Image 1 (cartoon, rainbow, N blue to C red):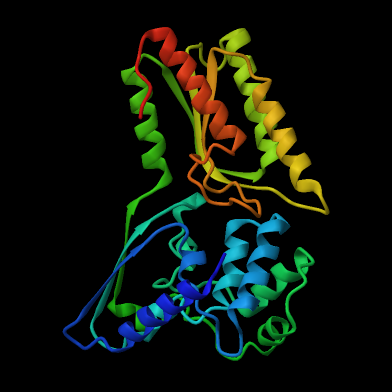
Image 2: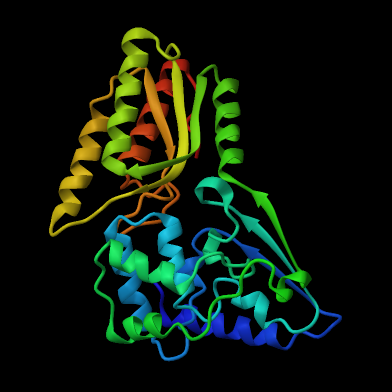
Amino acid sequence: MPDDAGGATALRILQLAETAGPDDLLLCLISGGGSALLTLPAPGLTMDDLRAVNKALLLSGAAIHEMNCVRKHLSAISGGRLAQAVKGGRVVSLMISDVPGDDLSVIASGPTVGDPTSFADARMVISKYAIAVPAAVERYLAEAKEETPKPGDPCFTRVENILIAKPQDALEAAAAFARRHGITPLVLGNAIEGEARDVALVMAGMARQTVEHGQPIAAPCVLISGGETTVSVKGEGRGRAQLRISSQFRDCRRGAFLAHSCHGLRHGRHRRHGGQCGRCPASRYARQGAGQRRQSQGLRSPQ
């Protein structure tokens, strides 16, 4: 969640960008998670406002591009505003994608990228998911005084955004690792989206089909995927939704296991964990399956 420490740091970064002279280079490293870490409320808004909206978005089931559309229009630094603050010199951003389609304007809410969305789009997301926002936020979005800089804005003539890593790279690395250890990989895709419980049901079915019928590949194998799944929460539904996902993965038989890059599994408590926190049922099942496979082949488990 956005916090005061992140806000203070974002303010220092923005002030530094504003002091850049014609011979200066502003070098940025931008990756997933930046939307929550690089937070600076737009004029008239507070960090509490951003926290309230961010929490509501995470629980709404909104897609990542919809969340970031709203975030960018409540921020003084996202949606190209960091690049806009640089009046002289050059900006080079090295970007690590964690979003389906590798849309640079979505990664960390695109602080150095032209924003193709508008205040009207942000209001549409709020309306679509019936999100209750603080009065100050509702007023700010309605007034829509200062739009984010759009693609083609002159401020971006001094900006170079370079994509240095993307989800597909991670999937290919995982597949190569599996091959080296005698496990056949099948990459299902790097942009899988939708409700987590629905994605879990499909993947569990694929795993069973693989074990029982050798389709689409024969075990031992690993099904590898990545993307941004969502968990819509209504009332006390979070635990039940998580339980459904967990039970579907546990129902898969041994012989095939699933590896899903679940950095986008969005729920209120631990939205971003890179699939390594031990609480995500998908990543937990994948690790357990990997351990069983390694034991059967006499391989050491990774530390």
